[in-house]
Image (cartoon, rainbow, N blue to C red; front, side):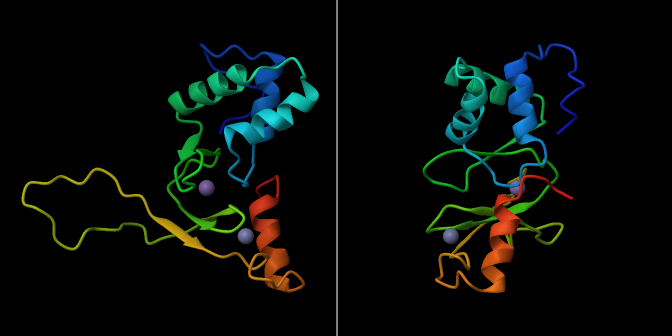
Length: 151
Ligand code: ZN
Ligand code: MN
C-alpha cells in the first residue's frame, strides 16, 4: 500500500479515510471490515460502516489492498499486495503470511484450458491454540499475526 499521506487522483482523503489507511498500513493481522470499523469507530464515533466499506472498495479497485477469502466466515483484508499465500488457524482465525514456490502448475489439465491464477490456502492450528501458550513458538506466532508494523 502506498503512503497514507499521498492520496492519488480521485481519492478524497478525509480524516476518516486517513485513519483507515493508517490502521491498514503495515498491518499483518488480515483484519475483517468489521474489525477495521470497530477500531476506527473508537476515534471517529460518527463514522459509519458504509464509509469503511466504501474506502476498502476503492482501495481494492486501485490494487492497493487484497481481499483474502481464506476465512469462510468473512472477507479479510491485506495491505501487503505482492504474491503470497496464507495459513489460517481454524480455532482462533489468526492468519499468517506464508511463502510458496514461485510458480505452482497443475499436473495435467484439459486441452486448451488456459490457467489464469492460482490461490493456495493452508489451514491448521496455531501454537497458541494448540495449548502451548507458554512456549516460544506461541509467542512467535502471536507476534507474527498480531504485530501492527511490518519490518
Ligand atoms: Zn489459533
Ligand atoms: Mn497476507
